[in-house]
Amino acid sequence: MDEKQKLEQLMERYHFRDFFSFDITPYASLAIFEPGKLILREGQRVTKLYYLVEGRAKLFTTLKNGRVNLFNFYEVPSFLGDMELIDPDSYTKGVRAHTRCYCIALDLTRCGERVLADPKFLRTICRYLGRKINGNSLNSTQNQGYPLKYRLASYILLTSLNGVYNEPHTETAEYLRVSYRHLLYVLAQFCRQGLIEHGPNGYLVRDPDGLRALEEEMRG
Amino acid sequence: MDEKQKLEQLMERYHFRDFFSFDITPYASLAIFEPGKLILREGQRVTKLYYLVEGRAKLFTTLKNGRVNLFNFYEVPSFLGDMELIDPDSYTKGVRAHTRCYCIALDLTRCGERVLADPKFLRTICRYLGRKINGNSLNSTQNQGYPLKYRLASYILLTSLNGVYNEPHTETAEYLRVSYRHLLYVLAQFCRQGLIEHGPNGYLVRDPDGLRALEEEMRG
DNA sequence: TGCAGAATGTGACATATCTCATATTATTTT
DNA sequence: AAAATAATATGAGATATGTCACATTCTGCA
Image (cartoon, rainbow over all chains, first blue to last red; front, side):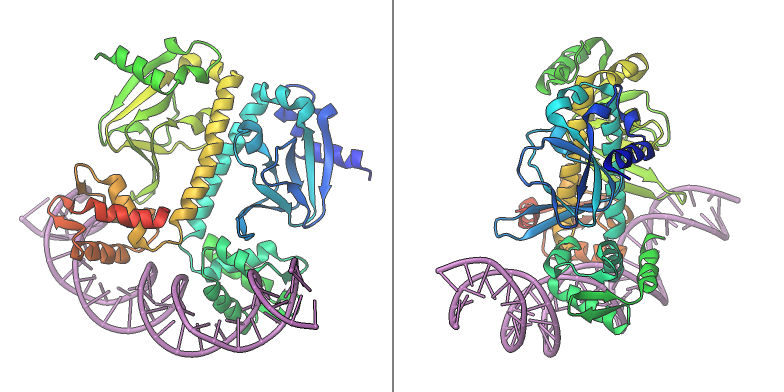
């Protein structure tokens, strides 16, 4: 299947054309990002609006000391660059592909003004942001307050690729709001329980069902 | 000063007319809510959009068992009922005045369709929601991870009226995501330290500067 | 090559927070 | 008024998490 067909398929699947009161087709293209590639560059003006339709991406900023501050994960479907579009003064956070990402891309240099004047599109964004607020508050509500054990199980499942968890501990510790020390304690505990195994290229996920059971205990 | 003048003054202060591409004046009125009064009724269709310009309000839902689930505080300026306007299917959360609240009210039965078709207004709401998302994530980022001591100090300052803190402990404990037991521990500790004093009608704020010092330690 | 700074690991101990048990008042319901 | 229910309180002991001190890689860079 060539790119044109793939784009068509994805626009269909997510009813992307229904977001606009005019034909968006001429402005839309397919963008593919391999794992680890930058989708949005930090602090830089955004010229494309992306709609993430396959894959998972990370939202982050970089601190002065070079440390990465992980904010959140984008799941499908999500707009990337929406904040910058509607609020050009805001600081652009970085977005990096975690798995391979497929995005429907809008060239804002050509249709930026038009979409910003389109009530149908603006209502779509409003609804999207509104639901994100509810989702966020639900999410942080649920995550917060549970012991690390449960949140880490969920995080390992979220971030592991091909059965291997290999995120930098400093980043994970910050994201999950626990001390580096405690993170290692719980990782060691998971190893002892046979949930994961400490290999040379990260931690091997030995018992995904066990991890899922922990995750369930938290969410349900 | 009569209501009309007050409304005029508040519209000026917050540049309320600039949110719209048409003259909103004929649809706007002033709404005043005394402390404890309901501003938005839970689960009920919203017929007015409020813009909170003075006072502080609580966003909540009520669980089946009657317990109140406090979600957040609205500070000025904030839209109330914006979610329901842009996403009519969403469940309406309750909003209750904490202090006396002044709101600019829009009668949606008369101008609902018109504002939803106004790109200028929709961009305003988008920007507002976008900033709220950033603010929320910043807020929950900051609050989370700090020991209760600091968060409670901040919460007491936020909710105390006339130097008296008198929120129900169950509600506070849930909102701050700690056990009831631990909340009482820390309150007792505050009493011992002379920060607050346990009177018959709630806790008297004895040393607001001491509480502020704790709050500062967390935020900055 | 070698050094400086990260990232990784581990131990000992302190603190924050939770769970459970149990009493005592308020408040609501019958 | 009695009974049921929720809110307030307090203690004891368990668990989760943090702080500090330190050793060991790894990695970019002079």
